[in-house]
Image: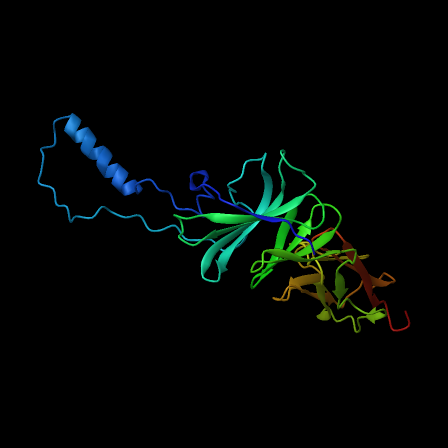
Length: 292
């Protein structure tokens, strides 16, 4: 796959991000001491004292290096150079590394996706990096997953899913994702609760997966309704997280004695990172009696 790559030198004075590059000014504690001394000298309240050259100034703790996928990156690029939407930060071969993802800015082609790889071997004193354009034009690209030295990105348009190898600084694949997520575990056809003893029955453990772009954050939801009234303070439908990204559905085995039977309607929805949506519906009944 053809990839355009050129090295660039990013001046440190631009700064990457307050959380990614430590400030070069004196620590706040030192500035406060110097300001206090200046005020006292101006007021004549301070007499010169012998200096102890070995006395250290209070040193502020070093800023931690954030890792993972970050939305607030403070990228060191102007809007005319690049439109950055997110970044990934971590250690690559022992060096602090930041990858910025987005599209070319106003001076370039806004349809052209781009990533910048910034390696900080002498963090924060030495910064150098590389620019790599995407093999397709889908406007901005966004990092959605990272595993070892491989990043997964999606395009703003075109439903492209791209794989980027940090070691070689190349895009190794670009595919169009038109496949919605897979939702499994919903109650099977004919789901029925009996006897109507007012107890809760587990009817499903619902999962959602997506093999290409991955599930969009917080997109997987399960909802339930009933054709018979329910007490809000004592609900008949319990949908709870299972601790691994899915949901457990419990329904109360109960119905009105004057009705024709209760029907629980359940719906699960999920979308992936490029916008494909899946919806699965199911029903469970509590018959009025065994003959109905």
